[in-house]
Length: 382
Length: 141
Ligand SMILES: Cc1cc2nc3c(=O)[nH]c(=O)nc-3n(C[C@H](O)[C@H](O)[C@H](O)COP(=O)(O)OP(=O)(O)OC[C@H]3O[C@@H](n4cnc5c(N)ncnc54)[C@H](O)[C@@H]3O)c2cc1C
Ligand code: SF4
Ligand code: SF4
Ligand code: SF4
Ligand code: FES
Image 1 (cartoon, rainbow over the protein chains, first blue to last red):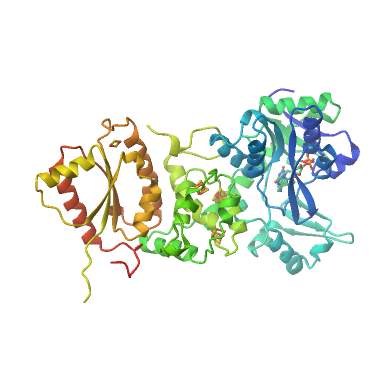
Image 2 (cartoon, chains in turn blue, brown):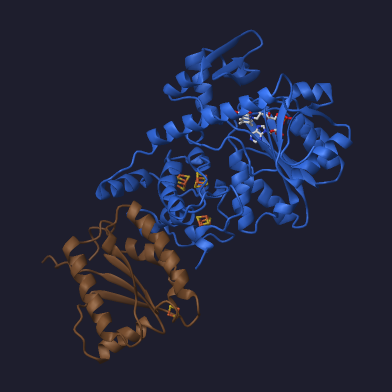
């Protein structure tokens, strides 16, 4: 094994191999990292139900094993949990599974000195998108005519979204559910980064066989993780078949094109100035100042936030300065992860507002946040 | 009686150049309209974008970043930082729908009193032509 290799791999523990999303490899790597003391803690998502997962930070391998499997309807971002770890253990090391948006958040935080890239192992997961739990439950009742409480398994296969109960199994195409307003979160539909090439490893089921995980080894750290799990007898690997590599590439490019089409559909430019102003004013009018959107944002990194410091609810400005400061501060770093829209109790489409501003600035400075260690334009002074 | 609207322009001046330039305009008795509200900062680099946004929301019809010419900043790189802040803000403010004239950047040296007065006259005319800012509240005078 070396950097740049594509392999298929799986857990040697038969039970874990079955429990895992596609071979239990990711969980085995977390366990291996703890057992070989490469890291002090790991982060994983503890499953509560198909629609709820709680991020945990643990050094207990059993706890890590219990978190195996993919939760598609738990649209969480793990960045801030990694930030907390480094606040508490500045010299510690940690490993965690990361979707592309988790990974991008972590890289942007690293640029702001909140995360030490040498001490964080990023086990990348390919990602085709996550779903909002509440709308997914509604979809199950309306479109699938299934009781969400009875769901035991959920799966995405060949463009179809499949749900299983103990008794039955139903599949509907993703296009059809998304046409009806369900399916993946809006931000995931237009997210064009599906394979986390900026992580240490890129793991997924694209191109892998039954109960196998496809892994691309991307960095020295990634290689270290794989090797220590092999040496520790936790995983088995084989070279990725040529056909698998092709399938993965092809599926990825199909997904990229779907994302582009969605992007054009969602981000229709508003040419007229006064209409633009009205659009932003109307959109933010219902804000109740809960600050949740700032709290969840994976790329916000202030200890004492300026957006809050400058804001006073008594101001009665036409647009709140809290939002204007945030629009500016996130202009170079917003990764369009959708967390802000997800948490907003006033249902303000914040991600779209942020991205409308951010995409202009990111295009102007030719900067894509979270994909490499390039200095953000704000800090790049001639 | 309805009070007549005249532009309110918030002007950020750096202590060493543009503030001295405005002083030079005064000492030289150059004619200027009473449209500016000057805020002196030690260096243009101290012009926090949050100040600019606050000025716009509090009823300014325009905000001007001013400072020493590039290369003349008394803290070496402050005006480069000001320029970056200005450029980023400009995109945001433009996306929000504010007209181009409402946010400007001008370098003015301590001896450029006439240029300073001419600039204020020019900006005032531009703002008079486009009217009050859509961000100011109707009750703001
Ligand atoms: C939301 C989502 C979408 C995915 N879409 C694709 C895809 O389109 N194509 C593809 O090839 N692969 C996709 N994957 C990756 C795939 O499902 C497997 O995770 C991957 O193949 C690794 O399998 P494994 O058996 O080795 O992982 P496991 O051993 O089962 O470990 C999975 C790890 O991921 C963590 N996890 C579960 N849900 C989440 C979540 N929502 N966010 C962050 N971490 C989580 C678990 O806590 C666990 O630690 C997706 C994964 C997720 C979470
Ligand atoms: S918006 Fe700006 S001030 Fe507010 S928390 Fe994020 S980075 Fe800090
Ligand atoms: S502003 Fe919203 S979409 Fe952008 S990074 Fe922050 S939480 Fe994600
Ligand atoms: S989450 Fe929504 S309501 Fe809360 S501060 Fe953000 S925009 Fe306002
Ligand atoms: S001191 Fe004038 S711009 Fe820095």
